Length: 183
Length: 319
Image (tube, rainbow over all chains, first blue to last red; front, side, top):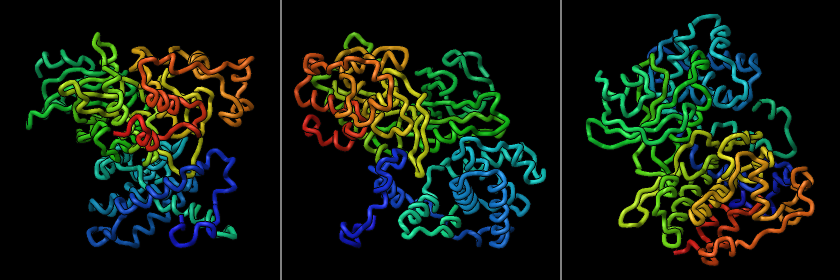
């Protein structure tokens, strides 16, 4: 990956130990990341808070903290969390959302992300329960459709997670604390 | 609503008609893929008279309470990322009323699938059209594979063609219902989808860590079928197809597919091992370069199988 900066033989092959691990897909891992790098810009979200009349950055950060809690409670995979945030931010950058619906956007985004990433995704009712019945099932289902329509169904996006796991793999000696921050 | 419009496609519900009839007319069923993957029909956009193909993805009744299922999220999300001359273009996802849960996909319209052409009394002249066919089909695959999308269900049904002056004017890969985008960290994938006749040996042997090479195998089978005018491997289940594969190409060995014999007891059952047949005798019409490319696409070991990008550089396909 860093071949352009250093002579090739100085770059440690961080995939060498995965040679026998078939799931690591060592033959085409470089291709995958090259493609991610190219497509990253297409889905990058710019600062949209100025266009939101009813919510601000502080409220977003409260929502994100709460989503982290939900994510932990449901024991979801890290990639689900990163995709949830990507969906929340892309949606908020296209549509003004009233304060009282911000949490609805959060759970509906996590519902979509879980279905996309998890083998066993939580169900709509689980999300209704965890938000203390602040919304009913029909609201979540309608929001799910609204989000998908606004995002034009683009869910196959490189989130920061795919880059972070790569960087952690490349960092030597390995740093447990950093790994925990990503996951 | 007039009763007559139902004649073309008897499967649609009144709700579905309410969604599509304001903007579309002249419906005609073109492909039936069963309720899970949706029926495809041809229709005309009222405003521009453009002919399009429409596919309705229905949510199974028992899943409706949970919103849009994974299969539809994955299907549409992959379609939205694709834009290539050899891949059937998704024009739009119809905006539907909130009380209709189905998802309506509108595609460009291409006449006929390869399967239909193979069934006509005057099939495709492979000696003349084999090269342009493979060039376009592999261009589409190379585009998918660079993005790390595996189609996983290539068969003559899913290759659409149109002709002009006896030349292939358009070739489009379609049906991404079970396509998969490879994302790190990788996890095991399902091996249960797709028609067994076109399934790669690693899938039939139960390897869950397969990759884009499975599509190349299917394309090799399809190319061979265009020459033979019948499926290369015929059978209803995995073991039957695997046996057919080994009868043609020989049982895999530790030399040509390292690790396979020790992992799969199925192969050890072939004792003594089967020797590969001479492909030239099986495909007498095919020129030597074509035979060489076919044998590389039908290479048993997925890691040694030719990739779509490499295949496009093969002497058989060089202009």
